[in-house]
Image 1 (cartoon, rainbow, N blue to C red):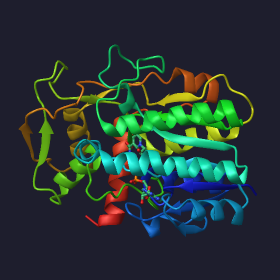
Image 2: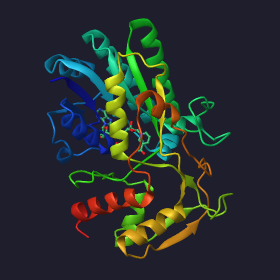
Image 3: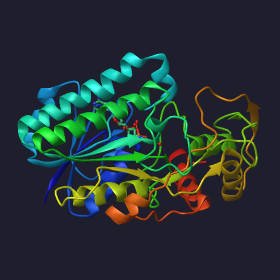
Image 4: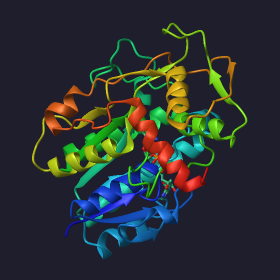
Length: 326
Ligand SMILES: NC(=O)c1ccc[n+]([C@@H]2O[C@H](COP(=O)([O-])OP(=O)(O)OC[C@H]3O[C@@H](n4cnc5c(N)ncnc54)[C@H](O)[C@@H]3O)[C@@H](O)[C@H]2O)c1
């Protein structure tokens, strides 16, 4: 059984990927400092409570578990916070990724799948966004991810590192079995926030911007189910070393949904009313972000199973009811 080091595997997307790794016959070895993740989310392999700021600790994990490949989720991932505190983001996302790459290099581990983001495109010049779109991040978070992609490229050329960067659009939904799901603190993602507003956990949802040039005036995003993201990681992992043409893939459904559509979907699925207030646009929020994932489809053979927003919301609601009990 091959062992895969899953940095950030106690977090949202990492835990869903660990579950799928286990199902497909890998041993997921989670490396997480639990700053954002949860011990309860690590169920399919060992948990190393470690921090990527400690290169020796990473090296020990790679040796102890005879790691074959790394899936690197661990990062700080709040766009707004990155603007206020770039130091934290360059330290955790860039400097700590340098530690990981150096430890891998020293241990002779030469395969990595990296969590990247559509945030590195900045304001879209054309939609849907494909991988040839100009990279022009408008916040430090996006820049940190681009830096890591650049490091991977140069490590690949010099050291034969086999790498894939997956640029996710909006991760959403939860494990359909209800075993794990999204639980960020603070929560900034739209679907859980809309559910919190529906159930009264949040008094009122803030809708940022109702005057965009979109059909209902609210911002449009591409919501990709977390299990589909997990599937893409497995597809990328299985292709490492088999020589695909590209290293970078967008992951989205190719369909955009507005904030109002998400509210209506949550109202339909839960049968509850969502109280919301309209507020002004947030700086740096593009009106619309939708992925062209044709490359992932043709080269990785990846097709998202969750194509309908309602089906995604159903899994998030199912998880919410099990986890929060309302
Ligand atoms: N959620 C999204 O919509 C989205 C979109 C694009 C990209 N991403 C990227 O995907 C990855 C996972 O996102 P998520 O939503 O699951 O986030 P998350 O916060 O739920 O998971 C990140 C995990 O990394 C851990 N971690 C952070 N710094 C660490 C460190 N120094 N050492 C060890 N562990 C550390 C945290 O404890 C947490 O468990 C991130 O890299 C994020 O930037 C997420």
